[in-house]
Length: 137
Image 1 (cartoon, rainbow, N blue to C red):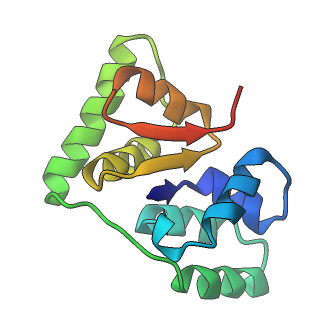
Image 2 (cartoon, rainbow, N blue to C red):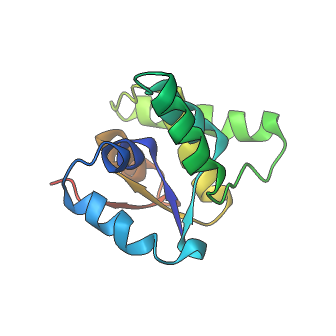
Image 3 (tube, rainbow, N blue to C red):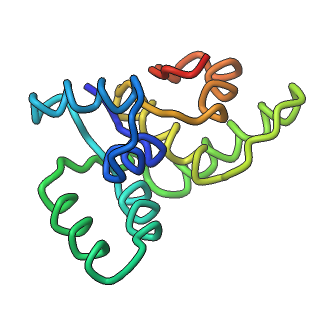
């Protein structure tokens, strides 16, 4: 099962081409294979260009399967902060703390993170529990 990151959803809803979009289209045929989470939903909605696209995105994502953290917020956020801290200790700067939260949610729910974002590759170098699938070179 996959937790699909904003980086893939945005390319999908904007009809951009790429192997990550092709893969998402393929797995969307199995509704049990795809999940999202509230933070990703928020990021996608923030990218809406106008009121109509905001509504279309709301409707589309309203039909998606959502997961959230399994642990209490303090534990999840501390784990995400530790992820960022461990990356920083290895000389890797993660540009968004939201990405660490998304990675933590994928780990807690035992999901593979489908993304198109180098930060997740960098996190996975430091955090072996993060399973990720990317088509980045």
